[in-house]
Image (cartoon, rainbow, N blue to C red):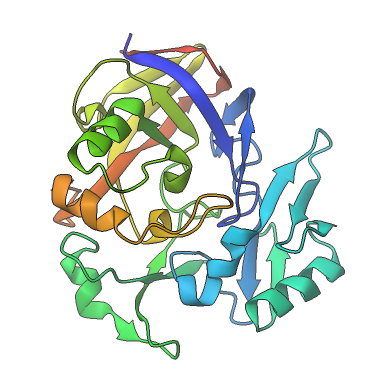
Length: 279
């Protein structure tokens, strides 16, 4: 046993605020209802707060999914709308300052823009070489997302309490609230020190009937530094992580990471309080 599930988070709309769940169902594509929708612009680009100057207002919106699978969106002014409604598209266009629409259909070869951090370990060197300065004055790269979905990479993203506590101890200034890192699962690893999920890739993780495989550490972008609902912006946070935790990721070099991506081997339910074991 390596821990227990202490939090389950779902984000029905990509880059909007999500919701806590007492339990959820994990299928081959991840947590049911997670990233079911995204906001697209006129070019078909997928809206992501990874480019804050273009898409940052999405993090001021909150999305939730009801029992009938309907997704509701609450805008910064407190007004509630149903995902897919023309009125919501109009309001999102006003919020973003350009035409935008909600969609539950990922474009073929979908891509999003990612602001390039100005600190070492914030992006692969190959991405830096391909970056461009866009109309907002931001240096960005264009990256693909998981085929047939609005997920960045793995079907699930997990963070351990040990990692967050270690970062708090080494860098006591920033706010390492797990919500900033937008995980699906927060796993309470007790008194374990360091960054335990760094050792998980290639190993099988079991949560009840659900079997997962850890595949790669999660490289971080600018998003954790942004305001998340009542959590204020924390510009120093990722620089602190870059100082304390840079590790090799595939062939991309040493990157700033928090958490781990997982793929689903056996679908099943997950519940807060479930034991997490490693096979």
